[in-house]
Length: 109
Image (cartoon, rainbow, N blue to C red):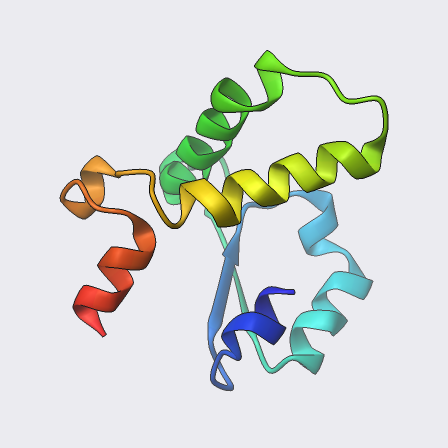
């Protein structure tokens, strides 16, 4: 979905941790098919992914821990709405100077 929405340039770097899903053959082939260059955090280096870890902490604290959903589809829809309807568009981020990710992207583009 991200590739379709953002249409990254060939060679764009996809950074992840060393989770088994990101190391898998199938996942690496998918990155290659999209022209993305894989990048993984250093072994036992939690600071490589500090911003992603912060995102997941926010997602859990602001959505997951407060709610339960009867179906997986409803949970997916709630998470999608949180990310695309709030987190990227309206949630202010201190490391971006107190503006949303979309506002920051527009500012630096």
